[in-house]
Amino acid sequence: MKMEYFAPENASLSNNTRILCCQCAVPIEANPSNMCVACLRAHVDITDGIPKQATLFFCRGCERYLQPPSEWVVCALESRELLALCLKRLKGLSRVKLIDAGFAWTEPHSKRIKVKLTVQGEVIGGAVLQQTFIVEFTIQHQMCDACHRSEAQDYWRALVQVRQRANNRKTFYYLEQLILKHKAHENTLGIKPKHDGLDFFYSTENHARKMVDFIQSVLPIKCQHSKKLISHDIHSNIYNYKFTFSVEIVPLSKDSVVCLPKKLTQQLGSISPICLVHRVTSTIHLIDANNGQVCDVSSTVYWRNPFSPICNPKQLVEYIVMDIDILKEHEKKSFPGQGMVSNKHVIADVWIVKASELGMDISPVHTRTHLGHILKPGDTVLGYNLSESNVNDTNFDKLDRSNIPDVFLVKKFYGEKSARRRARAWKLKHMAEDFHEGLSSTNDDYNDFLDDLEEDPAFRQNVNIFKDTSRIAVDTDEIDPSLPRITLAEMLDDLTIEDVEMSDV
Image (cartoon, rainbow, N blue to C red; front, side, top):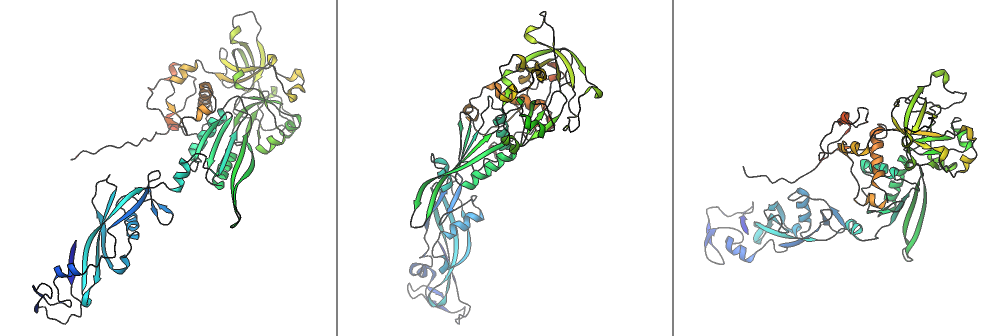
């Protein structure tokens, strides 16, 4: 402890006058207290009311310090914010004048913070005494309320149940990527996979409503809300509820075939009842293979006139294109009041044979498709065999059999899947390791979702795709020159932060 003496400005004694200390009789310069510095130190301590030891509470989960009574603040080591927090913890500083404050060096893992303070105070006879001392703060670990909620099991106030009653889970994979890109899961306490969906847990109702609003902005859904009374304080009239939001996603996925109700086809520009689900985003994008007509079905329109898929991607059959004939403009069927027609697809008549029946004495099957811009004789294409399918749908039973195609072609098949996946030099990020396990999906569902991202540039616009440095680049031209691929310009560099120890120079 360092102590200095400052004579008051109105001292009347001469600087040359020397007197004896009244305590130890040592010759000193005259001062109002008539005591030397050593005797002043023994009899007077201006830091008497200031504690030399104190405690700081630190949360290891979020790395924040407690600022009484209940606020948790983020402070870096040896920062101005941490110094201000330490000074607020000291009682008695108001009785002295603070001249300087700073940190003294301590071991990084000692759980100690030392603050060096310099203060001034008046003593006997109006003399000003300056004193320097060190206050030691001990760091104690205490979990904040937010971390306590996240660590405690079943400690939640709002639940968002996301469900989809479909045969595949490609829509959930798409939703996962949207949540990651927009960081919509920041306030989530936990994510629990279920058989047909996911459960998101939140500490407040507002956070749960934000998640519901986000899902509603990216997917066609319907939502139901309920609450359960947990406790009630009759004295303060405070109610404690648990809120539940039930979110149901439309039971449709990309590449499914649907049969629309007659009333809905009239509202959508007299589109054909049998359509292909081209994409599922905030609306349902449908396309008619006969004339290339497209339409968007909003969430409100769908739930007013719901319809189910009559064929799912797991029922796709491989066909070989034997011949193809592109339709000319005057050969296309058009009528007054027809809806918008896609300019990205080409209508064509194709003759196909099952891949399993190739080489047999079987006549090719004729059908009309919207894939005329990518198909040529000899290509392999995936489609649904409607003539041999057992469809259980009331809207389908009402259709005239002559208007139902024998085969509905969906997409081109680009060779062996294993070779295509080995050449994939990109990857996606995931929210949790158990995300895919809880959806009860196989690797085929996830790999089909990755194939859809490669084949549809518009579908991957809302997905963050990262370079996979762990894989060796493979030239896809050696596999198939027409193979769809994701360019390097569309990929992001995966940021990895590593601690590197700097050597002494």
